[in-house]
Length: 315
Ligand SMILES: [Zn+2]
Image 1 (cartoon, protein in one colour):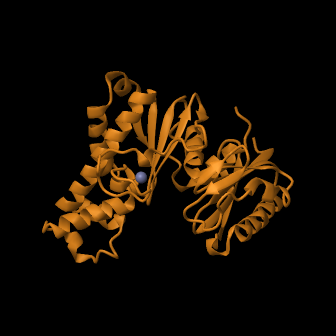
Image 2 (cartoon, helix red, strand yellow):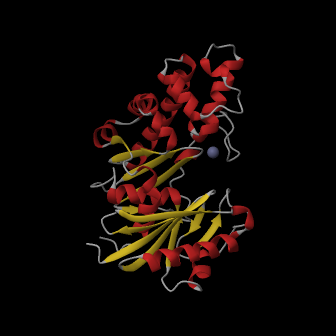
Image 3 (cartoon, helix red, strand yellow):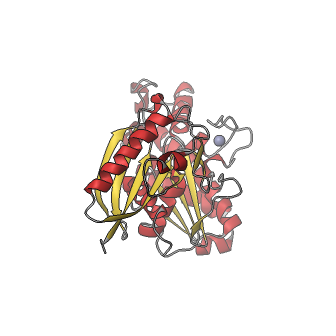
């Protein structure tokens, strides 16, 4: 099995993670370096090329391919990072060409949400299905679509933006500048805003004891666990809207599975329970019948494993 390995790179706003992954999706070695995003793309990708070289030198097998997930929009064929909100100055940076001058194996890159979907599909909770959506709940709400067993990227690589499906006309403001997106309710900022609104309406909650700047989704989870009504209702409302959006996607695409991962998914059934209700209210019979909603299995490893999967031959 291990006569060849693949390098997976997970480029984030804070860290660049790199790993050696075997063709069964097992990480045999991993490491990370700080991204130092402020120093610009040449700095980032130059250090990344050194990281790749170090991984390759340390591998006890041939490195057969390199894949990378990046936090932004990608032109996959050209290997260009079109834009990434957390990496200033990277717009239209030719990642593949830049790395080709430094490393003699081509590096394939894709959006991190697509990469996570690929990882879960090949080695995690999405195994065995042809049509699935991976939703990542965190600061943002990411989506990666697998249709007919392959990542569906759309005309310009912009497909799968589940977080920006509008579930409330004239609703809350989203980070994308529009109103009523799923992310405006289920993203970290949206959850915290809902708490703030309820507190300023005079609702009683243990969360009032934490200043608004210091409040984190984990506090919300802890409060909900302890029975706090405000925390529970915030998750419930957000989960319900999440489920409505999932029902709409299922009606359009007749998916087999929706896999839910990311930090906020740690709230588990507090958010997934109401999501299942919203889904059941929205999905047509055929969608209800064919689709299951399951938690992700790979956790933080999805980024590295999925990136490595990008570079593996299609099985
Ligand atoms: Zn939006």
